[in-house]
Image 1: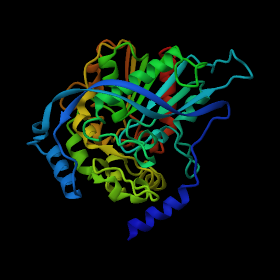
Image 2: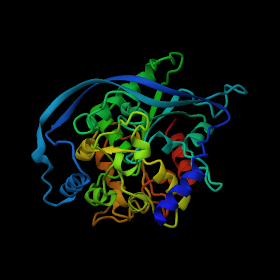
Image 3: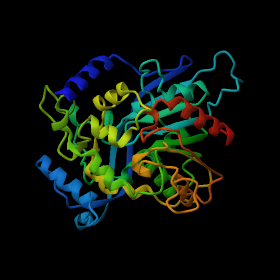
Image 4: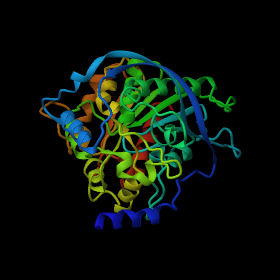
Length: 404
């Protein structure tokens, strides 16, 4: 009962809050048809028919005798076109086109992680704290391009009468990589629909968590696709992923939040392969570190939490690969990241590394610059902690230092 009162009360307070937008910027809400060809895994897993079966899947995924590979029936080629929701924000320079903050040849491509949508990059101000990375980047003259990943938020047409995207065999890491690759090409060559006058010479991929995995996978497969990487909530050590899956307590989305994931008018619901973290305390466990966050922010994250899929859980590691990428790489992982550091990133894990995230340098041996920043006191969801603005300052200063 206390949990219900807490969540409903926060929802009432926070529904009126909106993300920030810099004064000197023009933003466009876009729906972009993206054709892809991806090599996905053919999984013989049926959709779960009950929450009990979801827990069985989570238990199998998190167990030391993980047998998920028993369901693999080779690979297949996915040819499809998906409508991807995006928000493009472009700074304006009416006063002085030669301003030192005029970086309109560079766009930051923002890719959220599991549990969030593109609003992770443009969170509202809460209790007087500004959490918007979009605003920070725009203020420094960078354009931003944030997407709802395939199957998430407005990039999932199911509730609005569209065709259901298979959450097991379509929504996997290879498909995400191809969506990002195609959109990157569009940003470079000015082929975003109805945005033909806007193109960018440099594309910096900024990921969080699963978005960082996708960004890593992008440059592993296409080393020239990106000009720079900022990877939040990331390391090359996946030892704690099983405990993370257990910590999320995956729950069928339409059962956990029916008011969001069942269309009240039509009765259409997301199918049972679309999952959520179970409750606010699971979110706290996996994404937050006390006392570095505001409980209102945690409540907002719970009320607006987004789906992940069985196919994504299976293919999580698909992007963590060595790359011949020659651009600069910045890893930004909270000091107390639960998912990629087991709760304490400065640990060296018995090696001569300065931190657990520093080990990701083995994935980027050709990078022109490799740097690591551990926001102090911070958990996995970096942008939602009180240290957010200090983190943004570090990211943007680093980007300037490497030539963008």
